[in-house]
Figure 1 (cartoon, helix red, strand yellow):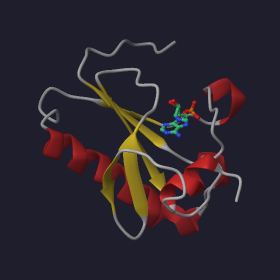
Figure 2 (cartoon, rainbow, N blue to C red; figure 1 turned 180 degrees about the vertical axis):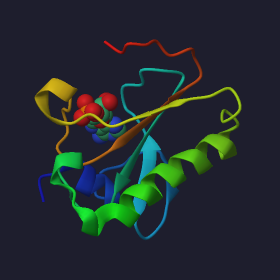
Figure 3 (cartoon, protein in one colour; figure 1 turned 120 degrees about the vertical axis):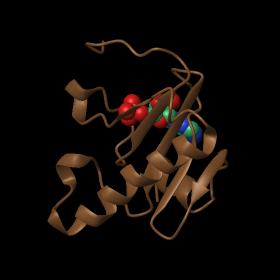
Length: 113
Ligand code: AMP
């Protein structure tokens, strides 16, 4: 198992986990791009959104709802946040395991870089 996020999901690599259940794990990004930077990943290895199918629809929805729940639990839902997933080289993806970045604690810019 060479995927670093699979190893985080199974506890083989340490991370600062903020939420987990049977389907997903959420942990703090090692190189935060905002005061709050949390990654939400499915336990199942899916490369990215392009590798997902209709069979993953509920899982994808669960990832988004977990992000919203974390935002409420950590107290930044009202101020707002950004949820983003990078896909492939042009999307800026560096880890080939589907993940959603939950970013908060500062004003986000648009368009993104
Ligand atoms: P992306 O560039 O969209 O693929 O995002 C990958 C993210 O994973 C980056 O923000 C990295 O800082 C983060 N990352 C890589 N390795 C780890 C790790 N072991 N623990 C926490 N975050 C990590």
